[in-house]
Image 1: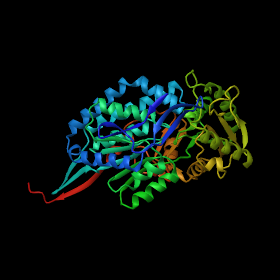
Image 2: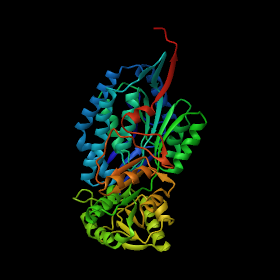
Image 3: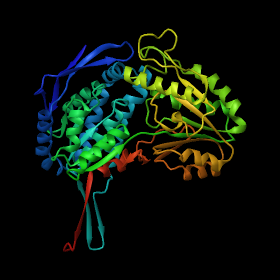
Image 4: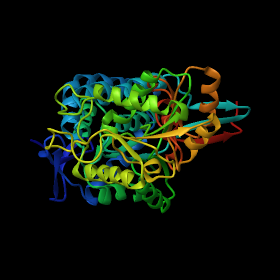
Amino acid sequence: MREYLKHFINGEWVESTGSETMDVINPATEEVAGRISLGTLEDLDRAVEAARAAFPSFSKTSREERVQMLERIADEYEKRKDDFIDAITEELGSPRSMSENVHYSMGLNHFRETARLLKEFSFTEKRGNTIVKKESIGVSGLITPWNFPTNQTSTKIASAFAAGSTVVLKPAEITPFAAVILAEVFDAAGVPKGVFNFVNGTGEVIGNGISSHPDIDFVSFTGSGAVGQKVMENAAKTIKRVALELGGKSPLVVLEDVDLKEAAKIAVSNVVMNTGQVCTAATRTLVPKSMHDDFVEAVKAVLPKFPVGDPNDKNFVGPLVSKKQWDRVQGYIQKGIDEGATLVTGGLGKPEGLETGYYVKPTVFTNVKNDMVIAQEEIFGPVMSIITYETLDEAIEIANDTEYGLAGYIVGKDPETIEKVASNIRAGQIRINKAPSDFSAPFGGYKKSGIGREWGDFGIEEYLEVKAVLGMPS
């Protein structure tokens, strides 16, 4: 069993000032996998003090020094590949192939790509007689989610380091293992003392403490809309800037010229990846009415290609992260049934033979109206709602009929039609067919999906203030 009872503050592993601990549960076995110390506000104050003390010197380091530091981090990160895979599989219940090819790889790619972009990033621009300078924002408080223990954490930290910002991190308390390994990576890579600080704890204590702390200049949060609102309220008291990456209810628009089998495979894989615990998941599948029956049959045929089971075996879908999350998803499935949607496959309860673990049946509803709860609220589980449309304009209208705007997906062939749909969906990122991830592309949402952008040079910008210097003598 893993025991992580210390916090990483000012370059050292230190005891908490409190005595409260928390068990971390393996969602595949429902057994205790580890224990962490729950930090106190005194622990947080120590971390912020260390970050504040380190900021003047770190913010003045050269671009080259920070590039080299990010490259060292990436090298050390690679050395811990097996440790990351083991930890994420254990704490999240992610299938090992997913832990390697998605979670581990995304973290590494953020450090590599940020280092590459930093080499050419412009911190100074001359406009006539005015010089525009981009300077580090200060101490950054990072609050990261449980569903991607390396991705959001790595992109936030890489961008902060690139900008010369010192960091205080609070990872999700139910998936803290990968963050501990990251702290060890930074230590091994020679990140200066105080530049990175890490305090485990609850959102109620450490999360609220970060967003309201007077000596933290910027907060980057990924999580639910309700908590994002609380972060903004707390930050407003000290007029600190915030970046929020929140929920989604993303549409996947199937066009008339598709290969149905390929479209079904893309749609299903998107919904069940990471057991549906993805803020960008395309949980509303929009299909031409004339193709509905054939598409449903294609979905039913492709689902067995994404088996559910033990994450240490060759399965694509593992358990949900917790009993709380399992209950939440069951509630939404019941709501879909109660609302009159047609259950195509899946449904309530656990898959046969998987009574232990927070496993859920990948579920597909059809005859879904876009005003149903299952079509409007983020379920965060492998539940697909199939909605039909008759015209392209109607598809676009349905796609935008949501309070969210994080992502959108289009499956089709005709470039002109794809361009029309992509241009009219109000979301921060549109993915066409099987387009791979681009770690230099901006990531973030419209509407209630958030504020600001992460990834690449757009991510670096979030951690910078802009200063205009007028009348500089030549």
